[in-house]
Length: 156
Picture (cartoon, helix red, strand yellow):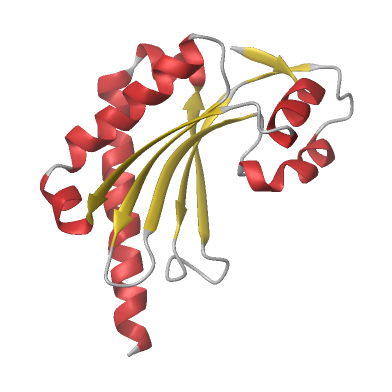
């Protein structure tokens, strides 16, 4: 899937994308992590296969603020809320770019910015390699949840 950079910026700015969200407790996620990540990927692929820009996320309920784990379509490794900075990465905004999949984790304890972004692959690759990327994404999410837990414990 390819999109002109200026079209991407316009669609995100105008909130012309689809959001699919699943909620779970952190303990439920720990028991069913792989299955929940597969569902998040399936929801994402359903939207991007139809040519839509997408955000598929899992909202993990915790005792404090929720942890948001999401897959977002993008043209660079920036979350939708930073769309105004996308044009800094391209010389020609009319050029088409491959749509990529960003794994985004939001939590105050992930790092100083409260945001972690990992570019996983292209939307086309994710669509064709669900099993492979499901394992990779599940593993990465579990690592990041451990980082959040470790950072939170270090605060005390």
